[in-house]
Length: 416
Ligand SMILES: Cc1cc2nc3c(=O)[nH]c(=O)nc-3n(C[C@H](O)[C@H](O)[C@H](O)COP(=O)(O)OP(=O)(O)OC[C@H]3O[C@@H](n4cnc5c(N)ncnc54)[C@H](O)[C@@H]3O)c2cc1C
Image (spheres, protein in one colour):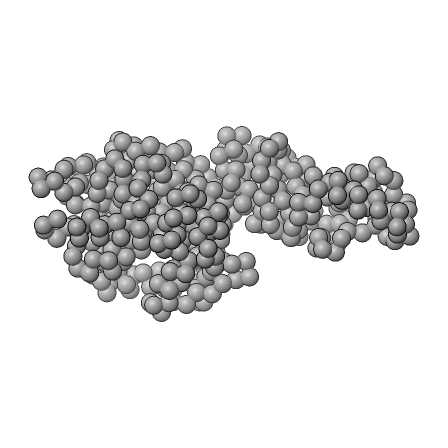
């Protein structure tokens, strides 16, 4: 490229701001970077993220294991994480004076527990690098306009009718239907967007009397053939939340959407142990320790009120001894522990994080550079792409990683 290339980043969200800073670092003044934001504020989702604390990333450093946290995009991110992963995120913030801390479950937050720390870091960096954010400048059209010198060139149309030309454009607009329809016109396939990361609202069940209890080793699946999702489950006054329920909402986002969120669920409350093995264990206890009181295995870590509920579900009075329970009762108890059937009737809210599954098809993007396969010079970062992670900081990590790869891709285009 002969002249100093003009780069437009559309969207002042997480991936747009990060991309601007990474391009600046890669190119050190060799290009002109501007950010355009349709609203009056930058980073508004980041501000409310993680309940206002901003779960920036996750302390999982193996690219293979990390990529498994993405129901959509895991194959592509497996390699992308070789370029920029949570270790790099931690270092990037540390170099700019922002320390991150990991919680017991691996989620990482700023030590201040405030998303404002991350926002101020970005805004200070953008200011010191003289990268402007133009507010209330919403994109309404992009036209590919191959330049006379064969470099990619775009005409960008803003709300209000103004038009501007850029050499390279980054789409960092998150989940936005209007932008997706603009991209469709440029030849991209948009994978139908559906919600991900929500809680599971259940049909009337007395389980909700246990609101607030956590069962640590649950496995929940959609019947008949869904993949079980493991982890602690939180019983709420409308149904199920907590890691395993949220994981299910992400992995089964499309199945649940297509079923209008009305499905049968099966819950194993004891770490996926089989009905048969539990039945055999209890039958053996009945034979070997008949005088002992019927009780759960301490390793299951079932709260006592939950155990009482399981007994009630199994129609077994509490305080029974092994000698007092029949083989049929043991069978019912084993089924309650390993295959409780619950009816999901609606999608509930999860206030801490929300993401959209779907967006620009991954097949339309070169993941080595994040460049469009249809429009050279057009790049994608973050949630605009059909990539999403489970809860825990993985969605922001996708934003940081794809923004960095796009920045490096742009350097290759400009420097060669
Ligand atoms: C309540 C909530 C909490 C969350 N908490 C977490 C969390 O703790 N950890 C985590 O990893 N993820 C979290 N997420 C998900 C995370 O926020 C997103 O995955 C991430 O922000 C995506 O970054 P992005 O840059 O792709 O999009 P966004 O951050 O959504 O930014 C897109 C920007 O583009 C702008 N824009 C849209 N259309 C146009 C247009 N036509 N012209 C110009 N600008 C436009 C938007 O106004 C917005 O500012 C949370 C999401 C929500 C909703």
